[in-house]
Image (cartoon, rainbow, N blue to C red; front, side, top):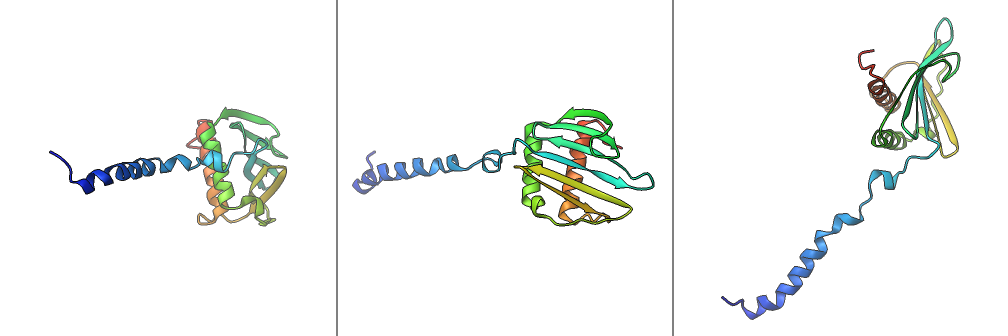
Length: 158
């Protein structure tokens, strides 16, 4: 069986086009390449205030180290440590940059507040709020951080 002359001439062009379109995904960047986790990344989050004015919360650094702490200032009286994998740290950094956490200006002062402090690329931003709103981007970020920290430390039900 022979191909018509027109088809024989078109076949190399069709094959060339098929091969060139087959590799389109090669140029796409992964999240880690497009938005790498800064070496100095530190996420500190929790709750402060109340009668004694104490803080309790967690910290996660660029290497994935998770620390639970409680005291008059962040990371005082370290109580437990664990580690997240780099994909989880990347997920948190992607979330923080997506909601522009380093640009947020929310600073609520009250008897009891929730807070997130992000340090990255030589900058630090602390965001505080007093009413939990599940729709607020900072609350969703806080919840994601808490879920990962508690899971890493085996505290899912706490």
